Amino acid sequence: MLNTTLDSSFIDKLKQILASRYGKGLQIRQLMDISEMDMTQKMIVRGKDLHIPLNVNGAFLGTAVVPSADDLDQEKRDGVAQLVRMVLEPAMYRWYLQQKENNLAEISKVAPNVENIQLFGEEMPAIEEESSEQELETSTGSLLTSLIHLEGRHDVTNKKVALQLHEMTSRWAFVPFNDIKGQLHSSADIAKLGEMTIFIEKLEDLNAAEQELLVEYLSEEHVEDEPLIITSSKLSLEQLVSISTLHAHLLDDVSVNTFEVDKAPMTSQALRDVLELFFLKDQSLDS
Image 1 (cartoon, helix red, strand yellow):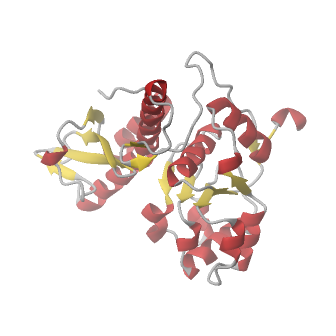
Image 2 (cartoon, helix red, strand yellow; image 1 turned 90 degrees about the vertical axis):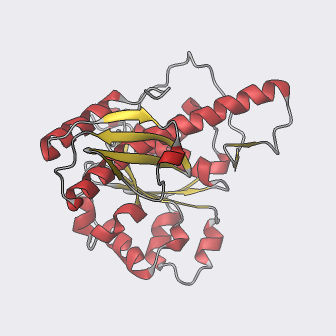
């Protein structure tokens, strides 16, 4: 098993869905020898089992195995693989970031100047460690908006904040927009996805049709059990405004829901408190 603690509620729900929808089980294994697997593939069939590599920001951290999946047709295999990645990869990504932070903390003890140190092949922005004994407070608020935009210089940190927001709002799946955009043709298609987080890593890369789709979704009223859209960019709001291909209404929505990641505290609890203040309403005030 992986040397991490995965949220059992998400794993249990995933197993229940796989069992009820496909009649299949699930195993999570550490990926020991990636040379044996073709990482360009989204899934690999070995004997009767379906192996799904978990690719997190270019790092291959594990594999999910669905036993006795040889009786599933290609469409169902694709559905299983997408569902598994949607649920497991955010948890694996959090483990990945925790390892980077722990490694950075250990290096800092013997090498105070860590500005040029690279961990896992990436530049690591400074993140303050806090005691592992400290328990994080849980959020009790509901979202004030269906869109949150993250502005920050580091893709890794932007995604970490997106995952923090995802966990705070107790959404069951975190999925990159690029993985599902082919299935989305209207605002209703987005709403039907339920209480998940849709993450758009580079807002400026959206084409005109994708922007129109988001504008349509964001112009409507939504309930809590419909998707939260989190966009991000390394570009400042001023730079985004200067891009003539970006939809004016989308920029309006982004401008009033922007969170400047680089100015935020980076201890887990302090970041959580700030995000709560910005984007969650206190349910006690409505009672």
